[in-house]
Length: 245
Image 1 (tube, rainbow, N blue to C red):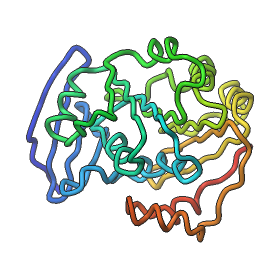
Image 2: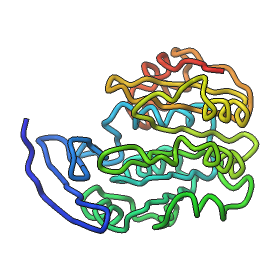
Image 3: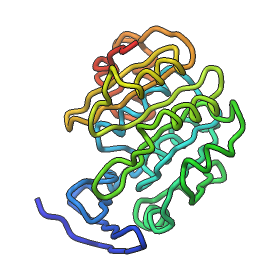
Image 4: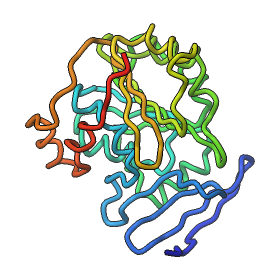
């Protein structure tokens, strides 16, 4: 099904397209990959399965502060503000033009609980104090590929440093990292538990928990209560999470 291009912008890093379909709106960076996708009538509701899966740590923890690395259309930020009414959300985005499009076309929340920083995520992480945030969600992509930052051991070390003692991380990958490589070994050093979710589009979401815990059953009543707040089929998603360490 073809969509209608409703907006085009360009900055030093390339183009940004907004495309409307009958029920959905998509952000793409001059490529076949969809950077963000929302339900036009419910912009706080993630459409991509991997985006929904990135929210699963909220089932284990109720963080007072969340850091998002890679804003896109802002659907994750909007979902968190909807899910966690007391939570402060800090989104870091490399491109001002992406933030502008998110605000104008993706209903990015205008909330005192949302802070947006335009900067390289590495620089922001380096400045943050230890134990600053309870959850880090990383989804940093250009038009053609994932940011190489997300597979660097130093990035994982910095994320671990700025997380609270009970903090979580969720990272979106187009390809599953080498489970025997130095990057995954770094994850196991920094996090007590490492989990994974494989989406139908072959994205892999990797999770890390600073504290040991046990995966809840897909019948857990807490998942049902989350479904009533944000209907993304929490129980079905949780049933597909596997432990890697």
